[in-house]
Amino acid sequence: MDQDTGSTIDADTLIWIKVLQEMFGIPQGPGHNGSSRGNPLTVHIPWKELANTIAWMFQEWDKAELRATPSVLEEKYTMLLATSRFLMMDRAAHEAITELGGLKLPATRRLQLAQQFTVDEWIRPSIQSLVLWRSLGSLSSTEIDQLGIGLFVIIAGAKEALQKYRAGIAYQPMDLTEAGEANADLPTCSTHDQCKAAWPAWWWRNVARKIIYPDNPIDLEDVVEIVKAGTIKGMSNGCKEAVMEKLAQVEWNKPVINQAVLKATTFIHSC
Image (cartoon, rainbow, N blue to C red; front, side, top):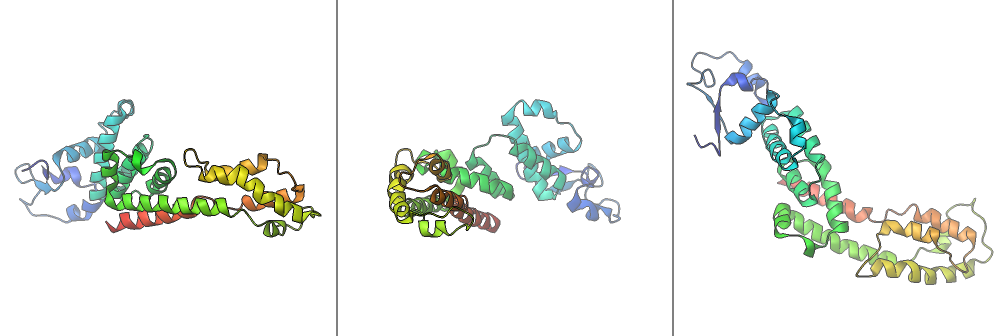
């Protein structure tokens, strides 16, 4: 048998696996597949992966030693995840996902594994990392191969959408009229026209330019702290409090990230 595509094994070794329990629970006549070494089962799993899984089943792994060698841990648990998904071994899959999740794998590698083995919890943090913190030009050929064309297109589209979203926030500072109405308990502003004139000018100098600055733009999540720490000449305390209240409710990057995660999840589940 080609050990890269399949393996032979007796049934007693596999009987506890969920997907095979009912099959092997049915009484069999003599000479059925898996009844002896001379008449083994054929399992369409590469021998290396199957042997790795059997070693895990019989607790032959030295997990402390594995954790000391991350590359070996990644290889063995990736093989275990592949086999456990195929054989519906939930406990093995859970352990593999937990151990692989503890490694500092690149976001592209996590998405590759998430796509191969449908690990939904890795999709959001990986998409967020790539959309917010990596430029497309910084991705290596290996990382692009890990993503595949489908996920690469989704991430590229999300980055384009994020730039438009950031520009919209930069060029449209919050309307102070709405901010002033946000909470009736805030102090009444007696110089509201002055506040409305001061706010856009301050926003452009201290926030908007930093959002659209090409070399080192700020994260949108930093806007709240910048406004909180700033002295806005000509704005009353009441209006600033109202602005801070409204800024605290803004989702910033989330709409773009949410849409990208939805597209990536839908794509992965369709593969």
